[in-house]
Amino acid sequence: MKLAIEVRGVTKRFGTLQALDRVDLAIAEGEFFALLGPNGAGKTTLISILAGLSRADDGEARVMGYDVTVDYREARRSLGVVPQELVFDPFFTVRETLRIQSGYFGLRRNDAWIDEIIDNLDLGAKADTNMRSLSGGMKRRVLVAQALVHRPPVIILDEPTAGVDVELRQGLWDFVRRLNRDGHTIVLTTHYLQEAETLCNRVAMLKQGRVVALDTTRNLLAGVSGTHLRLRLSPDRLPHALLPMLVRQDGAEWVLAIHRHAQITEVLLALRDDGIEVVELQLQQPDLEEAFVSIVGGG
Image (cartoon, rainbow, N blue to C red):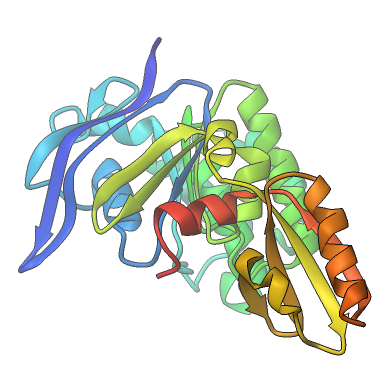
């Protein structure tokens, strides 16, 4: 198995803060991989080390086999990063920005690929518009385009859909899926866990600078116990007999843990016997958010 990203024992401190603590990670070529964790878990620090923006205090990191410190030119050519922050040069148009980005990698006559990126990210109407005139969502599209302009085999998307409208989100994922099918390795960080569940084959979860879970999405979901029954009731109360099944109350919804489907009948009978009407009922299978909260916590 050829690795697109290899991280061994990477440690990083900022003063007294331990941002990364002996992180090990191996991502194969062609994977669609999720890197998840609460704010401050170390995700962006790890990405900065891979991109050469920060140096690890200990350990080593490689992109497509190139050490990010020793073989930094080849490592950076192999990687495209879409950052969280909206960083842009206000003096150029979208097309000029992408041509300049191409020049950083020594690419001439790259207009055909630039046009394809512009088309796929629905930037055609804004191609000759100055960057400072774009909306936040459009600027984020340009950040994605900049990361792709040199056709890197490995693409890291750090919260790419934050503050982005639904239409762009769908178009972006269609394009990224195509890149993945064409052999590009995709690494995604996101707080929209449904995106990670839908798109990614494997998931790593970070907490306080350590990898606390690393497995296939399917196996992580299988590790979440039980199914949840969500109920809206009238009157809004739960019979005493059902309290042992209560997981939590979400506003006007009661969430009960179901371990076998026969329990649904038992719940309905208990509600009827107590004179409580079911206004709404939903059976909810475990999802990646449940796994995330179970493993990492809600912090």
